[in-house]
Length: 171
Length: 132
Image 1: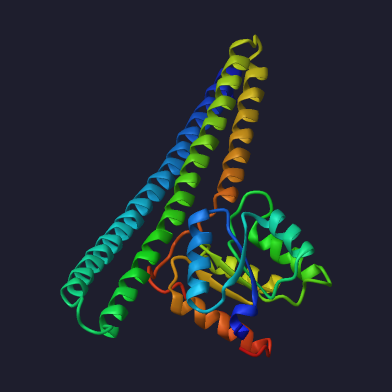
Image 2 (image 1 turned 180 degrees about the horizontal axis):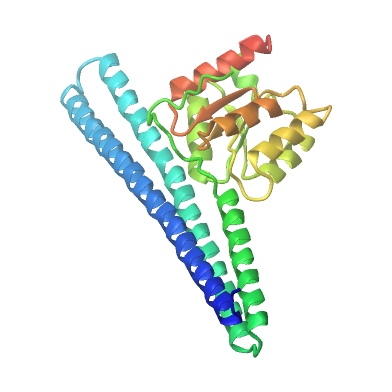
């Protein structure tokens, strides 16, 4: 039969192990989101750069042909570059949402650490090992519930495979 | 005034850049009568106050989000027939299915092109049997 000390030790190990796993998994998710943000930003910068250099080139050509009649082909190329720039601008919205998700996840982690800090105080104030064991198990349950709540709130959504048209064949 | 320019559009998005982009793309397609709302609540207020022919809405917005707005529109007898196109960053299949179940007329994932917007609007209007 386990002694009271053994039970306290067991509960503490379970709790600390769970805490470590929870923080690690959420930090991994945060790192993943930041990586995705970097990829999207990079895509946006490349598109904007290409578009604006294209606009610059077309304007230079138009300038050289200023005395010629209206150049439809040149106008079409200008429109195409502007459309690309518009697509690039939309990445601003996408990256903003991803960064908000990262912030929300960090807020959730801080909430969990506050629970741990509170429980630590509770444990240090107890005289009975049985009470400490119960307190630690409650902390474990609270942390699990907070982690599940955070994961449900921040379910993955921003995973565009095609950074071009935005078409989704469903309807 | 052309048939296109007579159509009244309501563009709902909390991001001003996106509202401006959609307004300009609609203008380019010939839809010049465009009103903007920054979230579902203000959109619903405008829908109950004025008359609109088409709604283009984001999904993630503070307060009332796009899905809630869609549900509110479909539940209101005076608004339920208005076509509603979801323009959103939510690319998950379950989000798209949820929008379809709630009665979305179409779905576009950001970033999108003017051609995709044109195609979706045209398809929706064809289904609604509205003359272009």
